[in-house]
Image (cartoon, rainbow, N blue to C red; front, side):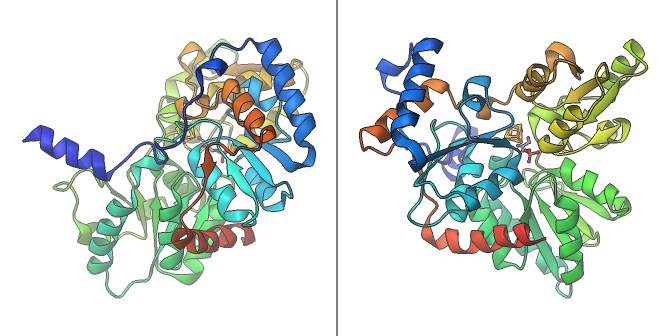
Length: 377
Ligand code: 13P
Ligand code: SF4
């Protein structure tokens, strides 16, 4: 009985959205770095302006080094919107590549080098779960206008759903503005899927007493009528990489060096964000370290690749991972292997497109509305 229920759930809720994408051919699996770099540069020289590579701040060094633009989710979506290249190679995760496909022109093609780069948090709010929750919550508050906001870390169908209900998308750098936009137009917000970003944003707006949580995995434990009494309803999703950080890590850093500064991503738990000196998107983290004085110490509470990049980019600043060796890399971001990058580029040189991300047309139009609303706030 239990096995059947699990099997049913797995067919309905998938972690890997694009599990039909192609695997790396054997000939590309054992390339050494010097050969790979040479081949990537040769392919890029041949492709010229036909290709632009966008790299998220959490990508490996070997990807970031070849990227035309490196940035946070918001900056990359703006770069995608402005890109002229025929091919946008996305060094990031599936939901980011989907957003790039939505924002770019129809003649442009978005390629995600590796198939398994799927953010687990995006998979925590599947459209069919959200549909069910929406029906319950709206029925419990029939006279209220509830505006759904989805974090960028979500799939295109959820972005489309939000647009269809008068809502929008946000990233960690503009979540507060998205909430303000929504409260100008409605009575309540349903925020998906990251409960920590939602809670941190509610605090930023002084609305911390207006929060309720919706746990989609617990059919018994939630009462739609009680939840619908709150102005901000938070979907119970989270990022494992950021949940790992605790207040004790900040206390330890300050005990080791009372002058140390701490910056964390707003996907961290509320008490961690509260204890830190600064909280902000990956771009804010980069800018803060870039503007630090030589000799300053900054402990970084986010994905470990970014911390390592900052150590390389700013050797004059003492950059530390907030929880030392316990800091995690993002397993989804790590799937973008530089061997995959070599393969997709050489295939383009040979006239073949591999691992193309194509959002279904019926979702694309509406998801674009939700993204455009974000780009306008
Ligand atoms: P940013 O929008 O700050 O780049 O963050 C994206 C992300 O996935 C953080 O885990
Ligand atoms: Fe998703 Fe967390 Fe990875 Fe960001 S760090 S892409 S939220 S799993």
